[in-house]
Length: 196
Image 1 (cartoon, rainbow, N blue to C red):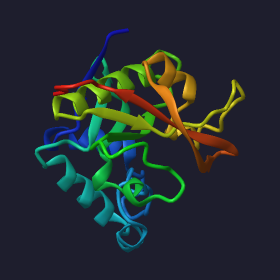
Image 2 (cartoon, rainbow, N blue to C red):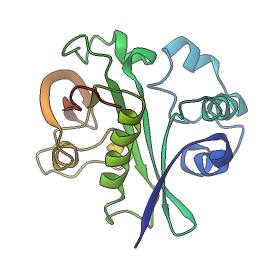
Image 3 (cartoon, rainbow, N blue to C red):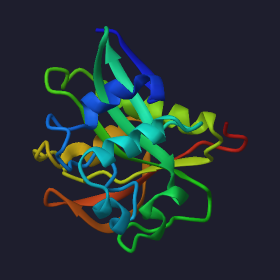
Image 4 (cartoon, one colour):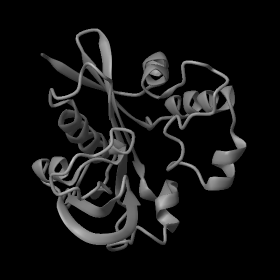
């Protein structure tokens, strides 16, 4: 199966909605905003306003993430942005390793029917490439360290340590964050001087 990855631009918003939006447009589901917005703003956005907010993000110069396609069908999503734009910048649970203007990858989702085909890894690689193309000196992720144990799919969106390791990331720090009952670790990939 051929996998193609593209930035989540405004022209691809319908595919972003397939990946992140609710079946009922009035529902207040995550839309991958819980870790993108401060909690007050996140709570204030309800129903269709959440999708409208993501549509605006897709219209910015820097896309809010990347989409995976298997043939003509959207199959996956990975969120990425400069950490300085995210609540992670002020997190008391996820430490700062240094003062570099790193990018974060905090959500990787693959649609049912497409799982187990390497799409998570492809999304991670392309999210790194996208960050690099925008000058990121390093990229971080905050996956669970599940040590081979099964992770509840509803909590697996943060990623799994081994997938990050396979992509060249190394553990940079422990965190006090937990997801699905597993500790999360800060994984880091330095992109070297002159990134971008």
